[in-house]
Image (cartoon, rainbow, N blue to C red; front, top):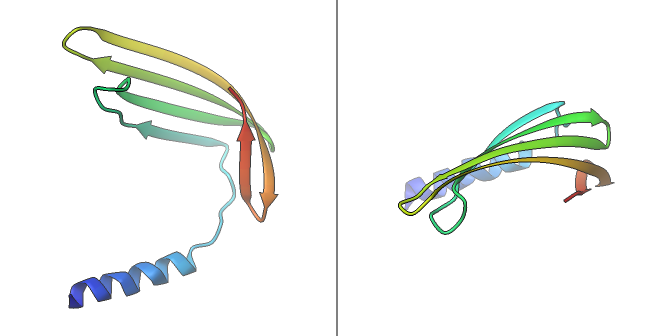
Length: 91
């Protein structure tokens, strides 16, 4: 119990000290899925302008009945709502 309280105090301090950062020109991500979905996917985003991004996704699935690969390209429009909180539109 003592460790839990200590961990929560440290975690709360980190959360309150975290500040918003500038959006980088490049971003890479990993999505993990299960056998009901498509499986794992690697995502790459590239900023074109301050409010536009390109995203490329490569996904794959190895199943007992079938294997699959997908490649997706997306164009996103990004708008700032308030203080660095953004929302985007795209397919």
